[in-house]
Length: 64
Image 1 (cartoon, rainbow, N blue to C red):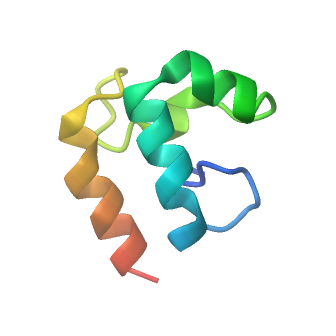
Image 2: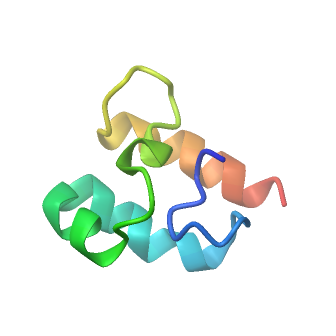
Image 3: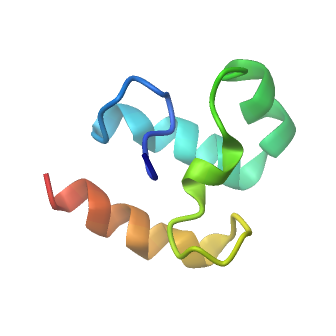
């Protein structure tokens, strides 16, 4: 599920730090969350994790 950055099957505030890590340090994210897909942070669906994914991520968080 897009936005579930810690792969606990829920999108919530616990996903914020992993999202920031994926955005700023993809290699560090891969080490910290080896069973998660880095592209779960691609909330705008363009195939890349960039600053353009921040607003859609916030929207997903605020929808719950």
